[in-house]
Image (cartoon, rainbow, N blue to C red; front, top):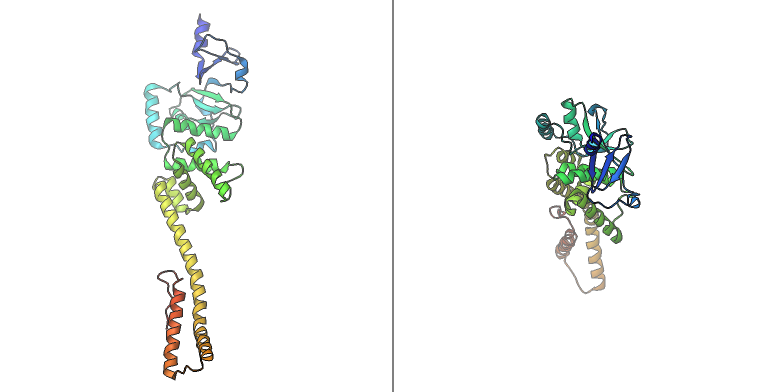
Length: 310
């Protein structure tokens, strides 16, 4: 009877399955919600997990997992206070990547609190992942299932996820814009946010100044404000670049206007020999012609930077 009680206490539910840790340390899947026997074939691709007690000091943290959700001092103090009063919540074991040197995938703040309180042992669950990408998505899902992510955390997650896109973001062809759209939708769904916010963050990551990026990561600036500032800076840069190009073009045009006006009057006199102008009249006509040509050139000039006629 005693043996059955110990075995029952070692049973940990994993999605509708139960991992039972036997005396020999092996894991066996049992269905505690039905009297029907389990077909082994349906578990060919199911990850076997083992719940055990470990010394917190023997548990390690590493990138990229520890960088996704930086420990917030307020949260750490709240969890620490809860653990002082109630102990470690065994219903929320630390998730470790099995076979990877006890690396934490989920539970960094709880681990930090347990270490500060000098707990001798805490419950952990060893979970297998086929690769780091799968482990990363699992870590993100665990967080989004518990709470809404901050803007800084969203940026961290999108940075890591985008690094792992096997072919990088495609170029802006009509076909590949659709691919980008689907990528944004999938990322938004994983992070529990909107597609537009994902696209704003990608714009910030690609084009914002380091100062703006740091302001968002520190919580001093929202994603929306950072996006607007980034777009304003991009528009100003484009305006200045276009202004330089136009000014250069108009400078050259300005230099050519007097010669163009003189050539026009010469052709006019040549084709109409009966038209005679006095010197004063020819000068007035020439000045008016130069002015009209300058107006035509200025129509294509950036507002505020029109060429001035001497």
